[in-house]
Amino acid sequence: MSARFTGKTALVTGGGTGIGRAVAVALAHEGARVVVAGRTAESLKETVGLVERAGGVAAAITTDVTHGPDVERLVRETVERFDGLHVAVNNAGLILPATPVADVAEEDWRRIVDVNVTGVWLSLKHEIQHMRAHGGGAIVNIASRLGAHSRRRNMAAYVASKAAVSALTRNAALDHIGDGVRVNAVSPGSTDTSMSTLPGETPEAKAERMRQQVPSGRVARTEEIAAAVLYLASDDAASTVGADLVVDGGSTA
Image 1 (cartoon, rainbow, N blue to C red):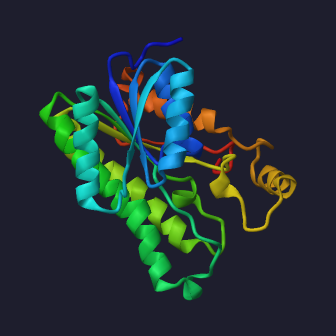
Image 2 (cartoon, rainbow, N blue to C red; image 1 turned 90 degrees about the horizontal axis):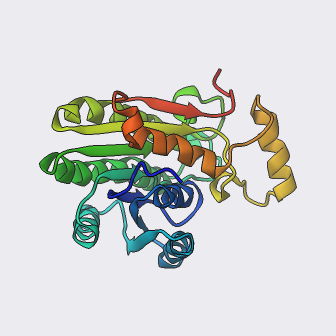
Image 3 (cartoon, helix red, strand yellow; image 1 turned 180 degrees about the vertical axis):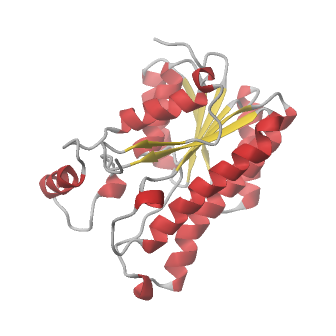
């Protein structure tokens, strides 16, 4: 077992399922004390159980990342519970059913921007405020390869929101590297999560669709995305600032 995060506290939003869960488990495996945050208490509890059964230390804090006071409370309680905040992974996100631009409901547009963009900005804001006052830290935002290389129709709301995450990452990195806070992003391509399943799609149809979309002929496991996140969050990436690491099996090559 590597010990890159021994003695460190890590916060993972959207930590109840998918990539967030895999990141939380991987961080704990490498020695971090992990707080997972999200809206659904039951799924967060399941992630904590996975960490604890593997011998790690974790806690769950129910949070709405679109609500500033909630995010401020999340960071404060994380620091109080585990005596600090050294790593943050802003993974909470939302995807909508495929819809052409002209047919996207205004409430759906606002909802996806609230979660995917405002939620990341609020998380960055409060994480950085703590980190810059306590010696720095590392933050990784979860964007998407579609944010910069979209060839998908009917996904404008999601694509626009993830492009905004990538841009926000670059600007936050430049604004705060002088404070000792490194900000980077990981942009997954096709990954085996519940968010990648289309309405009514069978597991077999999903697997075939995703295989056809990826030059490597396979979709990424959540553990592979977690490995990229942990690299950027670790001291191994000390000179990596404002990067957007694409993990997509060659889809944007």
